[in-house]
Amino acid sequence: MKKIAVIGSNMVDLITYTDRMPKGGETLAAPAFKMGCGGKGANQAVAAAKLGADILMVSKVGDDMFADNTIRNFQSYGINTKYVSKMPQVSSGVAPIFVHSSSQNAILVIKGANEYLTPYDIDKAKDAIMECGLIVLQLEVPLETVYYAIDLGNKYNIPVLLNPAPAVADLDIEYACRCDFFMPNETELETLVGEPVQTIEQIKNAANILLNKGLKNVIVTMGSKGALWLSQHGDEAFIESVKVNAVDASGAGDAFIGCFSHYFLQTNDVLTSLRKATLFAALSVTEKGTQFSYPSIEQFKAFEQKNNKKH
Image (cartoon, rainbow, N blue to C red):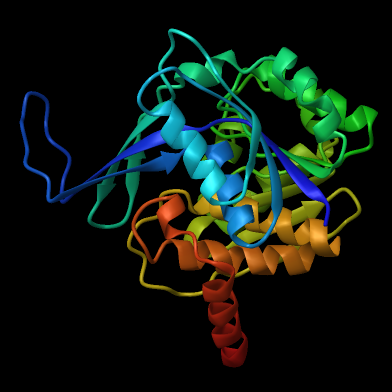
């Protein structure tokens, strides 16, 4: 089985559940708190690993109380942590997450050691990355490192998936065009193209702007609306989400990407992988947390079977 190289971030999620956000100067009691491992890169790696993917993680932790816990967490899912290194005198990345009772969330990101993941770290992991069949990237690490990873993938003919999250308006579109898959959500798409994305038609128009700039495959994750795929070859598909009792949407986009990456590497079939990813992400929002909420392969197969019977 080919491996997936996830080059990117890890965070410690500090999750507060609340019925409303406090006003300025107000102290408010909240009903629950949970701490867990997160970060876009780590979440995507764990989602794929839970489905049986062989994952190589290239990431950076600090030298604080969170570092060893993060590494142990990766290892508990069978993820290769040889290239998860510690950065002295720097905090690990943390993400205070505020989850409203409506299941919507607000997140602050303190990148910490993630800011210190450099091209040198990729060079150290180069031989291991060259054994992988897919490179998965996000934007919670320095852009120069992301671009360096894209260069490496292109040089050795390894497909690259870029999740432009969190969105940065100055993302080099030439590098984005050199990725095989470009996967923003609606908000990130709006930031990148400066066009409204309220309806599926508007999302399609915004995605076409990116295609016209030379991107190969644009896949927009749209939460409860599902996902949209447009390609340079004229492929177009809208994958509707299934209705679930949503409890917490944190990490659903990462669940989608991790699942898609695993199944695409297995099948080389974009549409099948998108359908599975849409189901996997839907199931993930029925539980609280990010990685906590990602289903096992057994849970996912049971959910998939149940939904296939409905159609």
